[in-house]
Length: 82
Image 1 (spheres, rainbow, N blue to C red):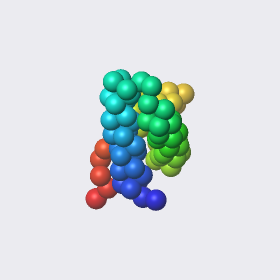
Image 2 (image 1 turned 90 degrees about the vertical axis):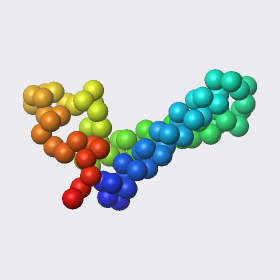
Image 3 (image 1 turned 180 degrees about the vertical axis):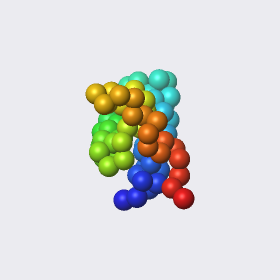
Image 4 (image 1 turned 135 degrees about the vertical axis):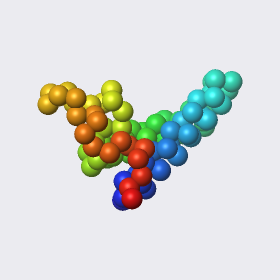
């Protein structure tokens, strides 16, 4: 999977989580929605882990600072490949 494809899947899962979050705020007893939220949450975490393993951190908060401030040394996650 390319960097762009992986980022697109992360964005889709993130959008679904926000949408489900809003739904669950007003329907907290909906077990089906809660189960789906858990599934998407797991998928989102897996996608993020895969991205970070292949391409580096998605946010500055995830940067490993053992070797200094490396966040600005690689293309930023939202920069598209030419």
